[in-house]
Image (tube, rainbow, N blue to C red; front, side, top):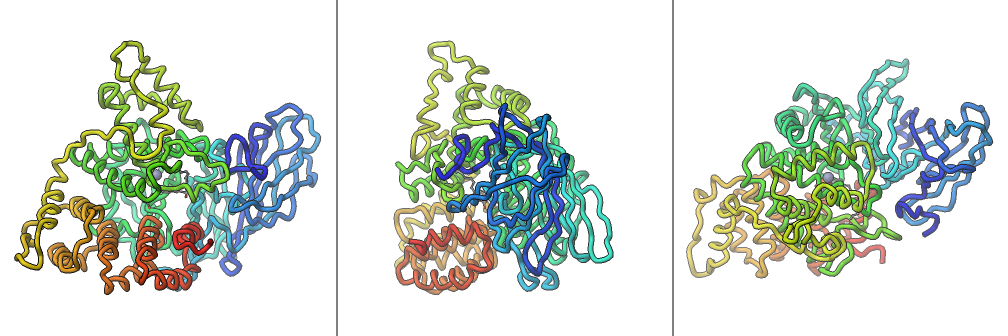
Length: 614
Ligand SMILES: CC/C=C\C/C=C\C[C@@H](O)/C=C/C=C/C=C\[C@@H](O)CCCC(=O)O
Ligand SMILES: [Zn+2]
């Protein structure tokens, strides 16, 4: 497929011929031009005897010169025509040299429309005084920031020197080493000594403040939300210690959080040493910190052991959700752990319904040949993946057997990139399915890994925590609102947690019947939804309103769509508006007007949701 690798359908790079072993970036930022300029030193090792080129990924990069620094000679290179959203193949000639090792200095600049970078003007920030820049490189956007082997099958240490205007702070997914004042700016130096895949390189530059929230953690944000952020994430160290008690030592030194502007496209991104989070987590009551537990879990699953390519994304995400819920189970209760899984299952059912039960994208291991990872993304690898692991855990005898296995798995494959067959082989070796009735022997690996639709087995989750939501849903479902007085008062629901309200709303959203606006008005009143700051509640509430075609609420939806860029919220709401014929035009006009403020990945996917590219 247009020169893409047989080992990774999302990358041109061929590490089996010559591999990048270390990255040293030296860049300066221009907010005026929305570009980075400078060079990167790529250390390259010949793998195949007789190899005469190293193949890299690049996207919209303006490369001006490539030098081999030890020979101090300019080398020849070619940049192929871009193919779809994958960028261009960059082939660099290996000069004739006796040793296997090379250092290439690539002089280049990024482009103003780099798909992995989001540039904000001062008026798009909270402080309104300074510009802001942040990155989101997963799955394959690192190539729009630097030429590299942009496949998770290759892991590198990296160092970076970044120069920026004096009022701004640069942060990266690495240890902050030192800062130097220049006459016209500041120089920031970073070191990441644990090998990571390119998608975990990350950068943010803005007028940032920090607060210490634990012995190895700071939270970073613009001044306007720093106190709120410090409050929301105050329990981070507790979560980290709980994760360590499950997974083993945390190897990354620091665990900082950066609260980004609202256009950040995901809930969180597990950038090492510096998790990126959306400000939609700032609920004011710490009710959405499960996302932080998720990102902390990635410190082992995804960041230490990494999917070899994105066809095995469930190895990153299914394991991470599974560990996230174990952390919450330890911090809250086993019943809460199961409740979270029930909520996740409801989201999985929604996704399977939307994609179609026979869609290849509902498989745990997907085929990405010719398909961009951003187009394959859904909750399936997360929730079907965690369900599979829960099933495996039950099959081998429960957590007391499975957790020591997990620690051995982490220890065996740490710092490596693996695929599903590696995991299966390791599992089978550990739990030798010898006996006839052995549950391990009965595991239908092919059905789980390559079957479409919902998981073949759904665990019998403890329903204690969800009972109140189910009861409320049933009461309101059977209420004849035109003839009977309301069966629920605010007192009945005042002790419901945010998660219980979310689950109740999810049940309403998934109900086969459409609830009347009268009934919805009642829900709005008893939960005081107009005042609620929890974004998961808001998402479900607004989706319910769209399902019931509550005309007046369209304005609220559009307002929120223009405020946040988190795809988990923006995509379903745009799809809902599109599905409602009389709201469709408004949705399309709104999107066209606001597209320029969205990050590439959000605009790219919503454009498809609105069928604008057909
Ligand atoms: C089977 C899917 C195959 C490949 C998809 C891989 C990457 C897709 C790309 O779009 C990037 C995803 C990045 C995700 C980052 C964070 C998520 O865990 C957030 C989840 C949603 C949210 O809470 O907002
Ligand atoms: Zn994740």
